[in-house]
Each structure stands twice: as structure tokens, then as C-alpha cells.
Length: 618
Image (tube, rainbow, N blue to C red; front, side, top):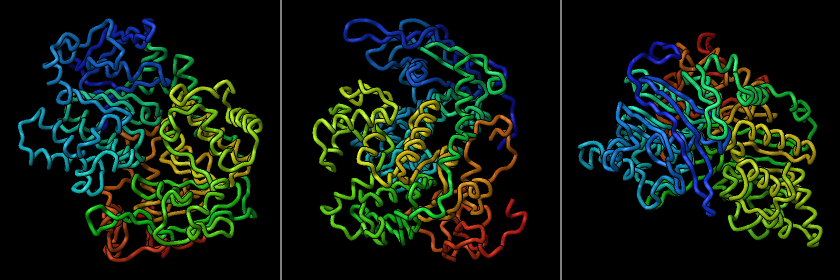
């Protein structure tokens, strides 16, 4: 980190000044809706400004309108936007095109809809770079590789040739970040840029954005729902409600004494998540509970098309889950978390290893014979909209598992659908709605209702809160805890959100590059992580705490270098190249998961053999 600066930006001519920006959307009946109402904002060189608000408040619309853009059928009805002294809203299209992508970068929240499905990601980054820089195709291609490496993409020489559908959500988000940063813009407008990223890559990216703004005088406008990001990086924060800015304040003032009711409410909501006590009953003793899932020596490899190489996604993973237990699974993108979850529900076939559900070996059951087990084993995916048929009504979505796995009559199914809606806090009147008519929170509740429709014993929850607003996230967390207590099911909670994992889980598994590196009681893992990777992971998590801002820390536990490729794994410790506590012996010494006296398991010989000194442990 460079020298700490104050929250007040350096004096100088503003990079951007917006006055009275107003955006309207016209409906099919001709009536207009006011989406952004009199939005005014000044951003100075080196400043990091955050915008927060509920979904639909107009924050994203206002952000892209600053570039003279608006999604149809919207229009900019009034206002002015001066960028480096030039009025953007009256520029010709050619002049605007020269500014966008070069002087103003944009990162949007939904990367798959912004990337061309038929072009490799390297091709797309190269084209954007060449549009604003006089370089050869070869130089642009190498620049694309360098940008992917910068945003933490493992094996960038291979990934640069991939198409969007071949990458995870987190990886596609990194591609958009690389594209937006490729020409080092003077103003970066970032709309939820890190919502699909793990905490270590999120911290690296935000560190880099902050450093760039600090060193070059560029500025960042960050649209986010994450109070942790606001607290740790932003100089000022704007709060929007119903299209208007209702509060604007330096970040410290906002956290210490928010002026508006909405501001006070979201701060209280976030603190409720961080220090929630309603989970005490949820975290009761499970020592005598029956083990319902046992995983032993799980491996999963994916062949690479056109090659004899394989991606080693899961490497010798073993754990168990007891009746009623919430087990957290955390780690960086590409660590194998989702693959483990998909193997448990037989959406992926393990390469080796054993998965036992009670006494049944799931891996040896033929797919056709596995259908009855689907009643007892369910999954909730990360994106609720994508996991539902967009043409189906809510009633049909919830009736499908009842049709497949029960003998209920039509009348009993209708009654069960109403019951499921009530259990998940939804109005029964929504039965005739389609997914697109629901909010993100309502969509996720419907997906959870579908998962519990057949009274399962075990549910895999894959990032179920990642796309939700802070208030909605709290609601879904509380819903899951209530349902687990009421229905008694166990679940594997896969997440980047360490705050949520800390609240709702009994135990935590930390994964890195396909391996479990630490597993133990959540209080032990969060209170005193032992594995070097666990330490770095938790140190990267952004808590909404202005007393320990990340940009103000002189030193912190961090990981350097790139994530090794899962195609060509290191010979010894997988973390060796990035570990701040490495020794020469680690390079060639494969690490074993070993039990510790406090009950947890660690994959690090220096920890298990007591080789760390007091200084190393700090």
C-alpha cells in the first residue's frame, strides 16, 4: 500500500460534474416512469465514490447515464454531464465512442450478457484495447493475457482462448474488469464489479483500483450493495432512494452518524448479520447427531477438449455432515467448492472416491435408480432466475418436484404449494406470476421453496445470497435458519460471504485449488485460523468497520502471485508459490490433512509439526 490519504480528494478541477440528470422510461401504454430524478454529482481526481441503495432505486441507471447511455426504452430527459470540461450529452456519437472505453471505463454486474458468446474473451479484450491504442494484433493479444493475469485468472494463456460459456461467473466478471481497465481510464464506473468474486480476488482488485486512483489521479464511481466495500475503500458515499440522492457524506461521517432513516436501517441490518444472536438455537450441540452424508477421497477431473490434459477440480476431499448441521464451504473461485456440491447431488460424476448417504453409496447407483434419492437430496443454485423455466408460473415451478416424487392428488399439490409459499414468506397470490415478475429476493425464496417441497434431509446451497441486497440477504439468512430448525434438514453452504458463513454454519471447510486446507468449528476457524491460506482469506474479508479500513492498514496478511493452474498442479504444497510463510522444503513436500488437538484438521506440515515461531504465527 502507498501512503494513506484522507477521505477528502485532492483539490483540482473535477473529472466529472453532473447536474440535474433525469432519466425516464416509457411503458407500453405510453406512460412514463421517473427512474432518476435530478441526480447531481461531482467527482474529483483520485476520489473513490460509492453509491448505495435498494434494487430498483436507480443507482445503476444513474451510473450509466453519466456516460450518455440508457437502456431502452429509457431516455435522458434533462440534465448535464461535464467530463474534463466537455459536455458529454451533446457530443456526436463518434466523439462519445472515443471517450468510452478509453477515458471512461465501465464494468457491469451481469458479465455473461455483456460478453459476445461467439468470440473468445481474449479476442474481446484485444478489440477494446486496439480500438483506443495503436498496437498490433499480437501486442493486443499479449495485453489481454497480461490483463487476465492482473485480475487473478489462473493459466491466462489458456483462459484467453476460452468463450464466456466455458468460464465460471466469477471468471467472466474478471474478464469484464480486465476489459474496462485495459486502457487505464481516467474514470472507472463500476456497477457491482465484485459481486461474483471471492474475497481475496475482490480485495486484490479493489486494492488495485484504489492504488491506481491514488497514484494517477483517476477516479472511481462504485455502485455496490456491500457496506464492507464502502467502509474499506470509499471516500464518500451517496445513498439513493426512488431515483433521488437522499444522503451524501464522507464515509466516516456516514458510518458514525447517518442522517436518513434508510441509511440507519441498512447499517442496522448489516450489523444484525455480523452480530446476529438469533442463530444461537441453530448452533446447538450436534455431537450425538447421526451422520447422513459421508464423503471419502473424492476426486473430480475434467478432460480438456482437444488435449490429453485434465483439470483437477477436486483432489482427495473427505468430510461428513450430520443431521441438522450447517457446514460452510469457502475458498476462492476455482477452488472446487461448486464441483464438490454438484458431485454430492450427482450433477457431476466423481472421478474417484465415495459419497455415502446414510448407508447408500451414491456413486455406485445408476442414474435411473438415483431418481428416488432426489427427494431427499436437493440443491439451490446461485442464480435463481437461471434455475427456473422462465415460461413457467410459480405454481408450476413448485409443483414439478411434487409431480416427480410424491403421490399427492392435484388438490393436495395445490395446498402444498400454498404451504410452501407461506413457509418461505411469500404471498400465495404469486402462484400465477412468472420468474421475471418477481424480485431477486422473491425468486430466491421460490427456489428455496422448491428445494424443500419434498421434505429433503440434505440441501446444497450454492451462493444463495450473492446477488441479493443487504436487507434481502438478511431475510434469506433468517429464512434458511428458521427452515432448518423447523424441518431438521442439513445443508452444505457454499459461499464467498464469510460474514454469512460465520453466522449460520456450525463448522467450516476452507478449500484451495481442489484440496481442503482447514476444517473445524466455525468459532475456531474464524477466531484463530491456522493455515496460511485461511489467514489470508479471512484477512481479505471486508467487514463494515471504518476503524480498520483496508486502505489504511500498513501491513496485513495477503497472498502474492497467481493461483496455480488446476491443469498443472505444483509438486509439493499447492500454496507454495503464494504462501508468505513458505520454506524451501514445502516446494517438494505434498501436504496431508492432519488432525490437531483442538479438533480441527490442517493441511500444512509447519502447523501440524509446530514449526511456526510466534512471529510466523502473527
